[in-house]
Length: 198
Image 1 (tube, rainbow, N blue to C red):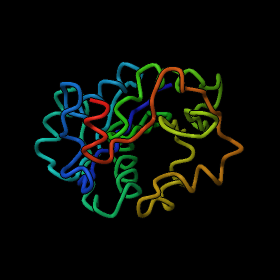
Image 2: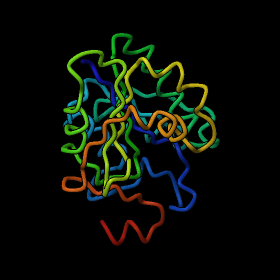
Image 3: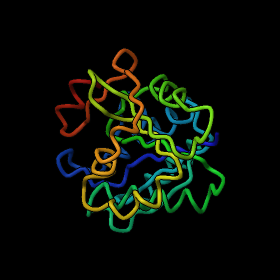
Image 4: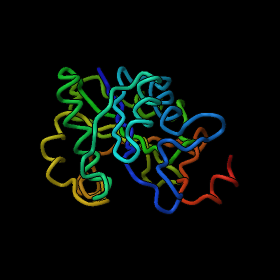
C-alpha cells in the first residue's frame, strides 16, 4: 500500500496572529514538524498544502522532504485546501492507494499515531479503507482515506468543514484506532496555547 500524507497548512492563522505553518514550536516550524511526523509514521510521500506566506512555508516544507500544493482559495477554509491536496496527490502520486490527512496546528499528533492508523490497513482492497485516530472514543486526526473515496469526497469539500461531513455520512465504514495514549489532538489556536504547551 502506498500512502501519501497530506498536511493541511494553508491558513492565515488570524487568531494566532500569523500563519501557523511557519510558527516555531519547540525549535522547528510547525510545517516541518508535521511533515517529519508523517514520514516517521510511515507515509511514502508527503504533500504540504500551503497558502498564506507560501514562499517561507514552502521552503520549510520542501526542506523536510514534502512536495507543495498551493491552495489558491485558502481563505475559504479547510475544505478547499484538502481538495487542492487531493488534486496534487493524484498528479504527483498516481499509484497512491490512500491519503493520510494531518492538520498543521496539531503538533502533538505523533509518528506513533500515524503508524497506528496506517497499521489498521486491511489486507485487501486498501483503496476503499477509511481509518481515523480516536481520542476518548471521538474521531480525530490523522485520517486515512482510501483512493476509492476521493471522487465522491471531492465535491463535498467546501468551506471550513474539510472531510467531516463525508466521514459522518460514512461513519459505519470507518475503523477507529485509539490514539490517546500516544498523541495529543489539541489545536494551537491562540498565542496563549503556544505558551502553555511550548
